[in-house]
Image (cartoon, rainbow, N blue to C red; front, side, top):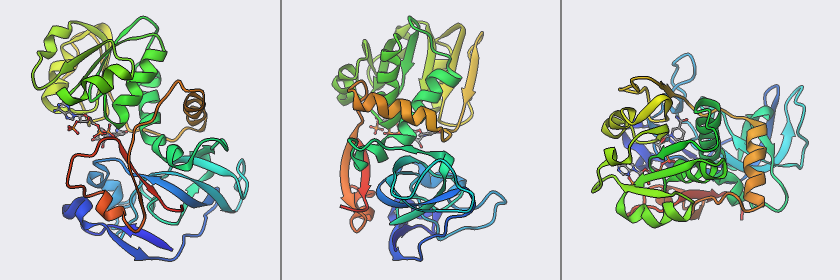
Length: 305
Ligand SMILES: NC(=O)c1ccc[n+]([C@@H]2O[C@H](COP(=O)([O-])OP(=O)(O)OC[C@H]3O[C@@H](n4cnc5c(N)ncnc54)[C@H](OP(=O)(O)O)[C@@H]3O)[C@@H](O)[C@H]2O)c1
């Protein structure tokens, strides 16, 4: 099969190469998926799990990409809940070969059925950004209707999902980003927008929940904006500052079939829009992940036409 592999962490996306590999065999409780579309998150190649397995052993050359939409082509021993020929989408294990390939092996429980009227390209754009937004807002942030949420990077992959889901849940959304992101964030339903390069973040006042995707100084200053009993949720690594009278939670997104189904239901009925930028073939994937201009929206690799 064709696959994108990486061997050199320092090279980043420039070190991706297209190779021929054997298709993987599905292990117990796995399905083998014929990948139709694959998603890749910026920053993925900095995660240790791309380079080593759980015991810290080198696992290069490894196949990156952890989001997929495709069709089940074989079942491993004992696999239940999905069938050969079924359309699926979801998140693959961080420490196994991923989805920038014609086939990938993944635990069945990490996938959900993809409805027939949802395109594979759309399906592959949802798992990481959709699940991260859902888990940050509802599992970790315990968002309630009427609460206020400060959403950093609101025009980005995760932030655009956070903005829409928080709005749908009845929250007051203050979005942040760069000047050029203002209209996109307001179109996604944010009530206010803060240009982090020009506006004063502290003018936002106190909020119930901060959803941080940026880290560093932005995260530290945001901790001070959390009101008593509120929460700072971050996906940018362990928090360097904590709210004086609230929680600080950092987490890594997990596969969840029920949540994937909630997310795709919202996409089907128009409550949730996904933010797809470049769509490229596997042959053109290396160029697509090394753009000469800042990409807008998520890059999806259409593995099969
Ligand atoms: N822990 C987890 O489970 C988890 C899950 C998903 C993602 N992540 C991580 O979370 C981060 C965000 O992911 P994503 O897919 O949403 O990325 P993304 O699509 O690039 O979105 C990030 C957004 O934040 C903006 N931004 C970043 N720094 C900024 C700054 N200093 N001032 C203003 N705007 C800024 C970016 O604008 P520019 O492009 O102009 O910088 C972009 O619009 C990545 O590092 C990713 O690896 C972690």
